[in-house]
Image 1: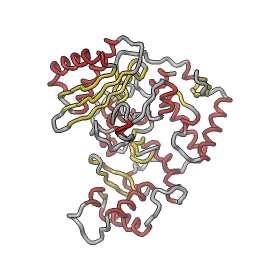
Image 2 (image 1 turned 90 degrees about the vertical axis):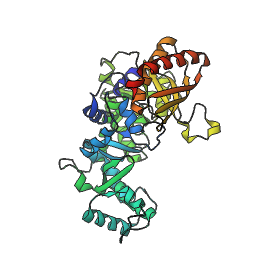
Image 3 (image 1 turned 90 degrees about the horizontal axis):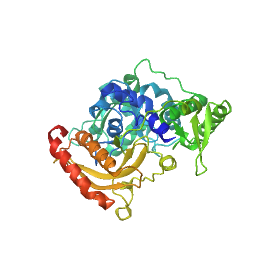
Image 4 (image 1 turned 120 degrees about the vertical axis):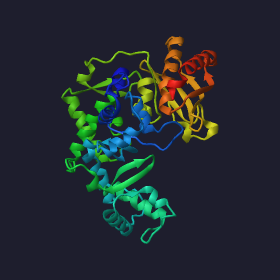
Length: 400
């Protein structure tokens, strides 16, 4: 089950989706979304997720995909980049917000929203930074906070889309000017939406629970439609149930059980806390017995592992976590703490795999030096320090 889950995510193969820009596009199409997050302790989550799967990926490629209209930005279970081919499946949520079935902001300023739409229609795309500027005020601009809310409401209702990004500064334009003409705009029925979700989740997760299929979706009608579809597919033997040792039931496609899977290798992956493979924490714990929590949201005195720990994946198991921070002014990666779980792998192989993973990770973070402060278990400290020092000394030029 573990290998099936990781293979579905493209984490066992060295280039499951190809390389560079095309590979990044293929990866998003396959895994369904890439979460956008503002935390910048290391490279942003949406870049990190793709870096883990796509050789020769560069952070600028996500915005290039946006400009190419291969992807669009909207809400999944959080802010995300989504495949443009899935655009129509964002329509029910937009429709629910516009009709007041779901509230994005409690107060909806229809007059201000209409004025913003008119302004964008006449003057062209609007950058989010334009709302924050006090130096370029002109007649017709309004107070920043209500205007920002109105802009967000228009975006969530679907009248506006993000047409460009400069870091976290977004440019908004009318949806009809952003969307490619060939995009399907037909509102999906509830059955169509349920089919899309079930097909997508088995494609990118491989193994999931019934609850996991509608992760963080609070629409009871949708949940019931998904449940009915799952029951149909179970009756048709398209899906099978697998009972875990804990007694919990997971679902898997029947044909996937017989599908050849990639072999495990000695490559270690350093993953984002928002990676698609770890974001469902209950599923992660059930499948891999890996208890993970992102502790930046936990008070400092209650943190067990650190502010921003990155999961470490090795030979089909999550073997540790690394709390680190990139110091961009000095191009330095500070590993504050490195925790290894109990595992049955040879110690020397795990250390070698970790150090080998740090080299491309430093390059991705634009760091040319690295330091390690604490290691657990502590008896690994000397070997890790020595291995890191020798690698950095040899590779300090190419790492940049």
